[in-house]
Image (cartoon, rainbow, N blue to C red):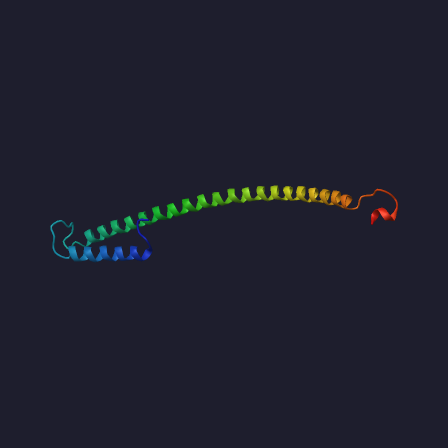
Length: 121
């Protein structure tokens, strides 16, 4: 960032304005008009446009980073959707294998060797 925040920009503008007014209050031969007001106004206009362009570049960088973050968020959301669908598939397979294991354990716990009640005890 060229200017950290708006307060710092405000202070820089006030400082530039007060410095220009103090510096150009005297009669200098470099001014175009007799009082030098147009020269001061021109310099202040240049300072203003510099601040505007600096702010525009800062907001442009912020906008571009926002677009990059949005694109990254969209790709992460798509990846999360794919991983959730894979998790659902794996959970269904685990439930099916657990049901098969439960069924085979139930058969193993109560083997049928004969029809008598003594064999079950």
